[in-house]
Length: 94
Image (cartoon, rainbow, N blue to C red; front, side, top):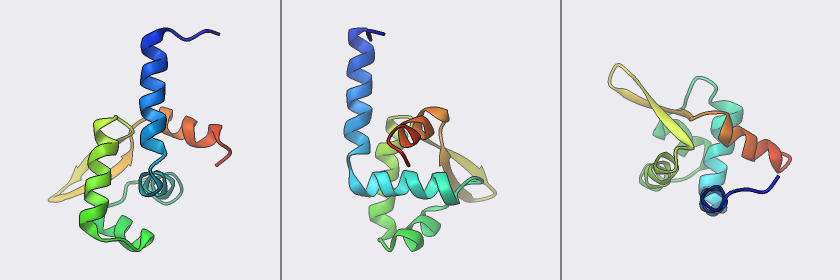
């Protein structure tokens, strides 16, 4: 199957986002530990990183529609946006 030019461009942009080690680790945490979502604080504790660093990376992932937010009361929870992110992670054997 040959991809259209715009599909190739979108795929390459997504792969660039996935190449960021912290972003990749966040996606893995969401995949394996965040079925119901994780907060910034949860992710920071799991990955031993600062909340501000996690927040910055979450914004990038959200901008590329790899994650989405769920609001519960006053808390924001992050989950994988759709099966696309999980497909990418599974496609590389993880």
